[in-house]
Length: 127
Ligand code: SF4
Ligand code: SF4
Image (cartoon, rainbow, N blue to C red; front, side, top):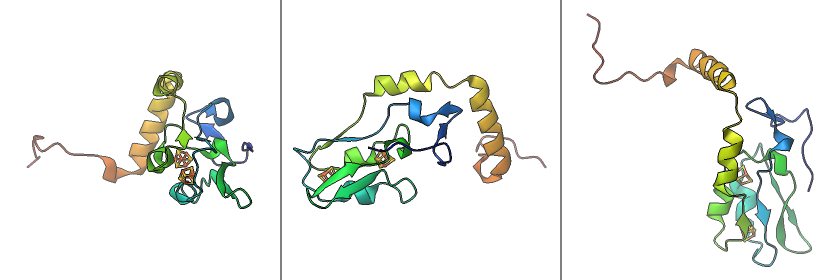
């Protein structure tokens, strides 16, 4: 398995070094049928999986490209060949994100995307 490097667009996750967060799929070779679904399920930009043509199995090549918290490929694999760390671990990681970091990201996102601002149906409409 390769990791990623500092120039990767995924090198930092909410202010934390991505390569310090142990979240990525693991393929159980004995269960993998080599169907390739995980390879095509993972986003084109992340491309976590490669494929071993000799063995006819998928391979986790860039684990640190995996989006922290995503388990789409694990859900998609009909042969249950893909596993992840448990959600308790993930919650512990999320709890380490500084509140200030979340606030900064939130403010920036809202200010750059006015379409994300929802208006409550019950809000009074200015005349
Ligand atoms: S989806 Fe599952 S069975 Fe198919 S290649 Fe990926 S790990 Fe193997
Ligand atoms: S969990 Fe999501 S981001 Fe990670 S390898 Fe699977 S599909 Fe890709």
